[in-house]
Structure formats: structure tokens, C-alpha cells
Length: 135
Image (tube, rainbow, N blue to C red):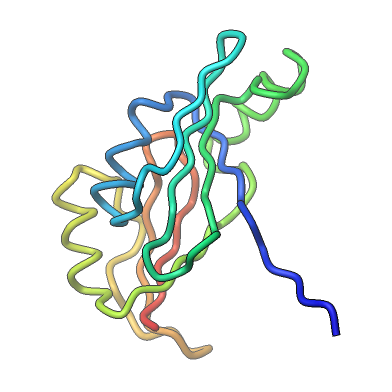
């Protein structure tokens, strides 16, 4: 049987520089690529425990028309963009404290959900809804 795997997932941010500390320092991802082209920037983050998988942050108009970029920017800024983006960790409490200490906006402190996982929620600097489950 043919195998298939996810290579990357894009996340739109209004300020790539502001997003880097959240994803690198707060979530513990590794910057694996930083590309600037035609006034835009794409920063790829690798997952130490998942070789070959990347999260790519870029500005709203990177690879989009100005109109589509503006519409996406408005959605992300008010917290209605794509997502939530859900991550897992083996230590939710430590991840939560690291993100909170970084100044990330807390949406929900760690709790056990009725549907199963223990999780927490944040907004990244652009307003994206980020959930973190205990693995």
C-alpha cells in the first residue's frame, strides 16, 4: 500500500517576527527554514519528534491576492481564522507555563475535557486559536 504523510501545515500571521518566539520558544519547535521573497516571508518550524513535518508561518498576502490576504488578515485578527490548530505534548503543565510566561494570551487553563483529553488553549500573537492536548 502507498503511504502518505503530512509535510507541512501553513499558519497565517500578521507579523512573522512576533510569531517566531511563540512557536520556537513557547511550543519548542525548531526553525528549519526562513525564506524571504518579493516582500513576503515564510518561516518553517520543525517538530523534533516528527521528522519531515513542518509548520510554516507567513503573512496574509504571501501567495495570495491582496484582496484575499486582507480578508484572511481580518479573520485571523479577530480570532475567526482557520483553526483551531491542535498540538499534543507529553507535559501540558510545563508547556502551558512556558507559553503563559512568554506573554501568550491564555484562552483556557489546563482542564480535563468531558470528551477525553486534558487540554489548554491560547492565541498566538496574530490571534490564531491554538489548543494543546496532553498526549
